[in-house]
Amino acid sequence: MTAGFVEARLPDFVNRLLPAFAGLPLGPMLTLSLRALARRRPALFERLGEHRRERYFIDPVDLAFAFTVVPDGEQAIVQAARKSEASTCGVVIRGPLLTLLALLDGTFDGDALFFNRVISISGRTEAVLALRNAIEDAELRPSDLVGVRGTLARLLDAGILGGLDTARRFAASAPARRES
Image 1 (cartoon, rainbow, N blue to C red):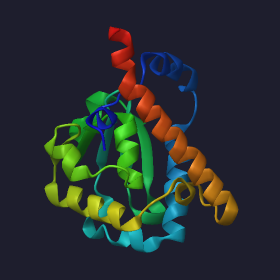
Image 2 (cartoon, one colour; image 1 turned 30 degrees about the horizontal axis):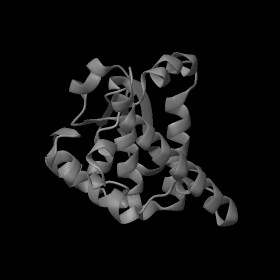
Image 3 (tube, rainbow, N blue to C red; image 1 turned 120 degrees about the vertical axis):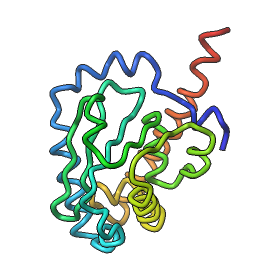
């Protein structure tokens, strides 16, 4: 794992394109995806124990908005949120979007990212640990979030993970290209 990869932020041109997607119902789409995952893999959410009702503030620092997530199994809720809403949540996790996504699929180690200050975490430590342990044990793939299996799942995983890897490399090299 190269340090530049974990510190990679979305390129400026991507941020300029994001307003075009502002009208998409990201919260409802992510809520449906998380609830469907809970139906297929309830043990993942049971592992959170009492922390499944915790409000987690997920702040991709390179986006203009954040998310609040209550991972309460089939009652899970994901909402797009203003950055100023962090104080309403028991846990705040901040970092570049591509890095946060890499935590979900196990590409990067959360402890290393935290201790190298690539991501920051504040709030209820026990809730953060429960979430981290549940995600690590789940070994999530993009196909798990979409709910497909078999050949289609393998193709989807390869395409999305390959695309994210390319995006991380591009984002990590973008500052170097600007300086030359």
